[in-house]
Image (cartoon, rainbow, N blue to C red):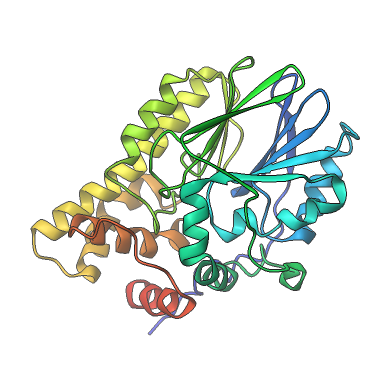
Amino acid sequence: MNSKAFASQADLEEKRVSFEQLSDNAWAYTAEGDPNTGVVVGDDAVMIIDATATPVMAQDVIRHVRTITDKPIKYVTLTHYHAVRVLGASGYQGEGLQQIIASQDTYDLIVERGKEDMASEIGRFPRLFNAVESVPGLTWPTIAFQGEMTLWLGKLEVKIMQLGRGHTKGDTVVWLPQQQVLFSGDLVEYDAACYTGDAYLADWPQTLDRLSALGADKLVPGRGPALKTPEQVQQGLAYTRAFVSALYRSAQEAVAAGMDLKAAMAHTRKVMDPDFAQVFIYEHCLPFDVTRAYDEASGIRDPRIWTAERDREMWHALQD
């Protein structure tokens, strides 16, 4: 049997970082399909959106931020609970960090499954969790909001909003209405696979409609390059909608036909490989994606908890 390397274990090549200014106050830290980080520089403080996987990795974000401002990094906003997004938050403590902001749903997910998710993701992403020993433990939000909150960084309005479920039930976006810049977290991807192992696939397209209605001129997706024109923003939204819709439709067809999970994987590949096989982390994500889509199409409304053991068992059953 020809066994593939589990998840992203074979992905050990360092990615090239881009740090781009999108507006007077917004920057995008992106890295060729690795998880992105947003930076908002206000009159008196900086906000980081998504904190990287480890405090050591956060140092590189800080190094880039310090090329543009010496203002304190007072806020870290988490778009959702996944370890690659949140476990680097402690790296900002020496930079003036005062508050870690997340939705109440994200807080609840950390309580319910943060520990399991941490072990699971460390196993999946060895390169992203380089220096994992620098992680002091789970990241706990100090502010948990419901629905929407507004922060003023001096004269800059920063809206932090839950517009619906998709990638997780806690998905949060950061919106700068004065500059029409949106930080979407993993609700939007571009040129990268959507990870849907903890998703609500039936809800996701409607949530994308709400993002689209904001009318963003620029958008920082969860993975992939910053989208810097209204046309590119629409392309990113359309790409994500196409990915999650094809996935869920394939699962619904498989369940309706009485296929088992392995057959559902083969059916999904026929539909999705032609359009998506070449994008970042597709082979890593697909087994998790199909498993969750099959569950949801079978009537399992809430995602099951992934553990390091369940990850490997499922992944090899579908990929080998």
